[in-house]
Image (cartoon, rainbow, N blue to C red; front, top):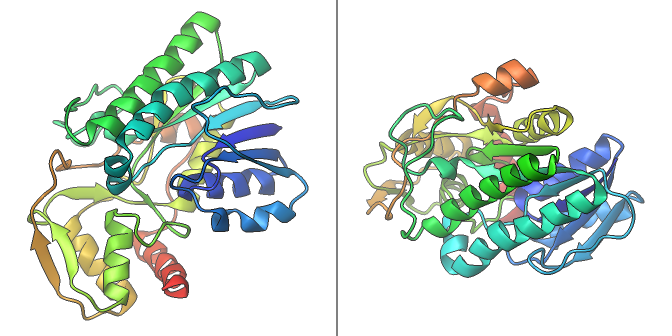
Amino acid sequence: MRILVTGAAGFLGSHLSRHLLDKGHSVVGLDNFITGNVDNIRDLFKNGRFEFINYDVTNYLHVPGKLDAVLHFASPASPIDYLKFPIPTLKVGALGTHKALGLAKNKNAIFMIASTSEVYGDPLINPQHEGYWGNVNPIGPRGVYDEAKRFAEALTMAYHRYHHMQVRIVRIFNTYGPNMRLKDGRAVPNFMVQALKGRPITVYGDGRQTRSLCYVSDLIDGIYRLLKSGINEPVNIGNPRELTLLELAEMVKTAAGSGSKIIFKPLPEDDPKVRRPDITRARRELKWRPRISLEDGLKKTVAHFKSRI
């Protein structure tokens, strides 16, 4: 297949592009580098099946030639990013999704939207299954990301129902691994940089809020299986192993061989208290489950971060 990946220079987009090339497909990568990094895809330019377009997907979108799939992964995804770029975050979720859907419709291609567990907001049920509608503050600081993704899902399903397009909606839970930015702002890179530099590890709130972390190669495998499936409804992809942020901080300390102290700071507004995916649908329909343990994944990620600090 010839596949367009928006956000190709980002954390997930770069891993996804590499995986698709490894599977024998051709990839057209698109990114405007608002949060992406060319270093993430520099090695891909040597591959004759990889093309790159420096472009903002919120503008009119045209890609010459056939496309078999359009995978819309462009978006700021870290709280520090969408707090810094609130309007571009809303635009890429709304206008960007509209442009990418239009291109997929024109090319008679499968469309996939990279959605997020943030559509569940600060959930009132745990674990979160695909039928849960969420608990989101639309006017809070995180609403620019949460509501952009919720709108993107609604628009995707509208195109599916009205235009009978093949669509895929992947709800991505917390993911970590190589190619994360050192100053990404999320828990794993924050903890790792602090631990490796011997600085105090900052935990927000009392540290009892939970996350479920999936290693990036497991996530990409699930995304690829979903792309090949015939499932048009949302599918959670993530690791159902739940742990507190305080437990995660201790695990990062161990993986990094660090003696850093753990300190506490106030919890950011609307920060979710729990996060755990119900992956029943992915297990049943995609025969997918995560395989990399958190302990092994943290070791791999620490090695990558050491090489960049």
